[in-house]
Every structure is written in C-alpha cells, then in structure tokens.
Length: 315
Image (tube, rainbow, N blue to C red; front, side, top):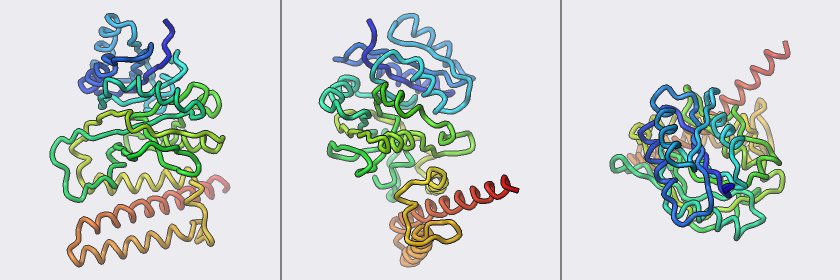
C-alpha cells in the first residue's frame, strides 16, 4: 500500500537515541498508512547495521544513505525518497506521541489551504533547568510551544521547526528543498534551513499552521543548559539572519556602513541594559539583554564579513 505520510529522520552518529525515536514513530495508533525513512548522514557508528536489521522486520521502515554531511542534505535525501503526499520531519533525539501522525493528517484535512503544519516540541530535561532559562530562551534548545493554534504566514512570522513539522509534497515541488548553506555544521551550533524554507513559502503566498495537539519530546543535552552555549547560539543566529536578509530586520529609516540603523541602536541599547542590570544584581534579566546583544553583534559581524568578501571578489 502506498503510504499517505512519509516520516523523515536524518541522523548522524546517534544510534542509541535514534532507536528510541524510531520506536516511537513505529507504534502510532491510530494512523493512516505511513513509512519511516531513516537517512544515514554518513554515520561512523552502528546506525546502518541497526536500522537495516529493523527494516528487515518492519516493511514500513526504509534506510537511505546520504554521504554529503549536513542535516539539510539528509532531509533532502529523505524528501527525494519519500512516497507520501505528506512529508513529516522529526529528529534522532526526539520521541513522538502515539497519535502524532494521526494529528498531522487531521490538521491537513482541516486546513486544505495550508501547506505546512507544525506542533509543540517539549523538553525532557536532564536536570532541573537554571533559573535564567525561561521559555523565552527555548529557541537555542530546539524547543517550541506557541500555545494556541494559529496560522503562521507573512503576517505572523513565527517559525516552525523540523523536530516537529510536516509539509505537503507539492510545497517542495513549488519552492525547492532545504538550503544547505543555512544548515548546522561541525563548527556551528545554529541553523536556519527550516526558517528559510518557510520564508520562501510565505513569499510564494503560502500559509502554515501551528497545531498544539501535534506533540513531540526532545532530550535537552546538558551542555545546552549553560549561558556560554546560549551566547554562542544567539551570535550565530544573528550571523545567519544577516545572510538571509530578513525583510523585517532590513527595514530601516537609515543605514550605517550598510547596516540597518536600528540594528546598531538595538545592539548598543541591549549592551547598556545588560551592564546596568548586572550592576544592580538582577542577573537573570541581565542575561535576557545579553542574549539580545549577542544576536545583534552576530548580525553586525555577519554583514561586515559579507561586505569584505564581496569587496575581495570584486578586486
């Protein structure tokens, strides 16, 4: 039977957590006809052996090898191999609810004019999180909860994430696949290929939907509970935004050395606020401003670096 939904997991050297993720997908009840495609993104551990062994026992499970390193390459290989009209994504350290696929189909049936559906990504904490790590700092942890169901589009530019997102096949046919230039690399902690995909879809007039009943759970890695990790993530997030040229960030009444003026102003304001809050001992609030400052600093560095590259190429 041809599957209605294809689930794609791209994985790299996480054989143990991958098996738990695979198991959660394969115990869906109730669910439409579906397949699970595990993309081995050039793993050096036991991923290939374990998944191929499981696939011999469950015909819904398919193994695909993608030698080009990077999650965008892996997901794109999964999209190319998928047979379903709906392509759902989750990660190799995530477990999905037993009604996850049923909720995906139900949402698409209720919203025939929406090409992308996403849901909640809730944490499995390794230990109690620190006091400063409020929900507003969930983005670096790849966690997400927008509360009420809602349309997400050019007028409400929230980002769904590929730990819990499903896309109609026709969307990829219309706007293309994930852009590898925005994927996370060995030297980075941040990526924006999912945001970029949605931005392109919005510009083409598309709409997404947030379904709070579509739930997955992500294991939070202990090193991500540190301020140093969050500073690094925010800085790289700013660099990627500079590369993407987000229309909201680019809009400005004046420019300074090619930078939107409000970016420079916000960076200075956040820096001063962080210092003032630190002086009065409000460390949690100070870190909120510090995280904001890191984002704008990354944006400024990314834009300046791009200008130097452009100048060098023109010489």
